[in-house]
Length: 300
Image (cartoon, rainbow, N blue to C red):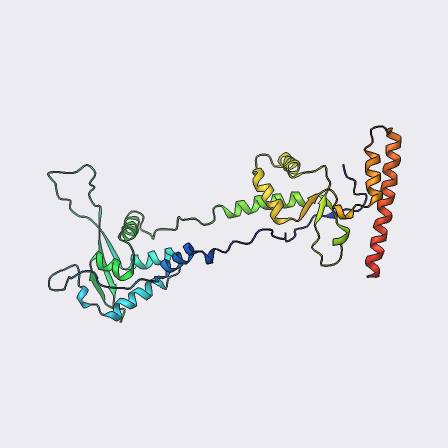
């Protein structure tokens, strides 16, 4: 068990020097393709049907000009988030419930009757007139898949609101932050010893907890105060990422006299009285050394 005498520093949050190279996702090929897909890169709006106003009542794609196609495309991809894009799609879709189902003689078991029917439209350059189009042209002009359009319309028909974001993202972030703060407060309740070479102002020196401690023992102490609150992996993650701490004394701070006293105190042949004398001599030596380093700092 290491005795730090009366020289004890509080445990503070510190920026740990990262040993591994920081991951840069924006340079990965997968991330570049993802950004291009979400921004409409590589896509070109086009009409993918031959319907006309004279031949079809539900698609008047022949009335759209090239400027109309570009306007719809740019307006859609100007939305940055998926939820905003879904709302823009929903503004161009009219969702109607099916009023009558036809009776089919031969019904395949896997086939399901549609509960809603959708009408699609696109804007013109004056933003006042909407042109009816078919689903194929609607998806081709905006560069979206037909399955995405179906999911948006089906969710709106059932819930009467835009489909929310369910992919990734933070989950219970406030609760997790509270647990991490409990761990930080517990670690800061200990006292530590700083290296003599890192005591200058501005030095990011590593600090040291007593050697009889370990992350596992500190976690067990935390469990006594907050049973079944967090896992050991979370405690270890906070300890390594938020603090620059080690255990014991740095090897550079160990002089030959300190090493001699340590060996003497561990000698099993000594009596308790002799061990106490050796311990007192060791404490006196450490205090003299600390006073010397303090004077050196004042002189600097």
